[in-house]
Image (cartoon, rainbow, N blue to C red; front, top):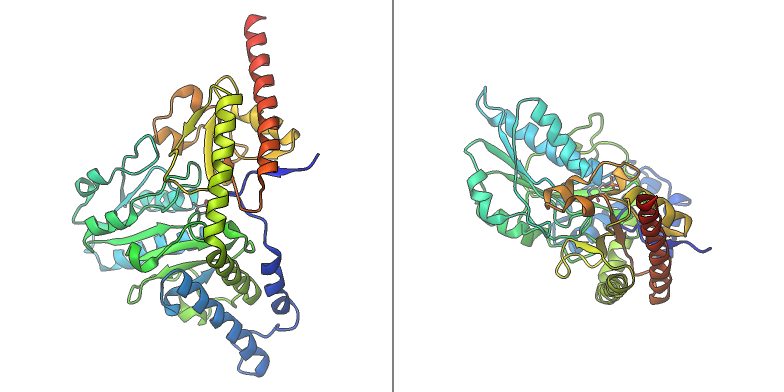
Length: 391
Ligand SMILES: Cc1ncc(COP(=O)(O)O)c(C=O)c1O
């Protein structure tokens, strides 16, 4: 049975053009970009070209791009790097205050938890039933000691898009603003300049690039305390020999997205509509968690009352459909999703939620086949549930 891959928020398949662009830098161009000889210069040229392309597509300056090992590192660097730098400026005895949201990815939520353990005060903005933070209450949370606001752009579980530019406007420059755009860059247009944030994280494997590379954009004249020491690369902000082939892969994947994004968006929106409408009829009753429209096109979170998420996931896997119960990093965990809880999703829907995440590599035929497999599994599990209640 062929696999139908509906877990593109966990990771996406790398495009052949990306692998092709990376190949010379895995083989022939192997110099260290820091070396002064010809071999090093060729590698350095490729690295700086990739930095320029990445910056241009995300509407940033090349010197604002720091390459990292992925989204997790970019988020950690921003949070610890900004707060570390800002705490150094505060008066002794004032560990500072952070405003965040309850729907952040663990690579943001957990660094914040670490800072909270060190005495930093933390507030979470409320979110509505669609998974959007309530901007109306933002100003009430601001304090004189607020050092950092960190809110993601698109949520990885339900696809809601957060009003980042509005929050930055309300902040009036009183604190730094970090934005986790890992589920947005390479999926929807992202302008670093227009968002107005201090730092922004992206990750290549979420947009058909290679795993193990991402970037943190850091606004000019902003100090981010390095989290690694021992080299002068990337102005010492993120030392270590740069992975040239991976960085070339990241920039190529972004370029392909920029070339094709209109068609990709149309196609993915159409596939999402097809999946949702078919399941609403054939797998009724279902509950849509997150926005029907206006979220990112590639994410659809649905609950199937009468089923348990863990058995759904396992049986869908056996039926050749790859999806997820929540964020990729908590897959396999039976705990209810904190994102859905924050959205006040009702108890039964909370424990029967599945995330289907799409990509333009899919086809209408694949979605139709996925619907038939999902409906088969859901009906069987509901039947088993009702039989065991009778028995
Ligand atoms: C919103 C969000 N932020 C950060 C990450 C972590 O990115 P990476 O896998 O590149 O470390 C993920 C990955 O699932 C994500 O969805």
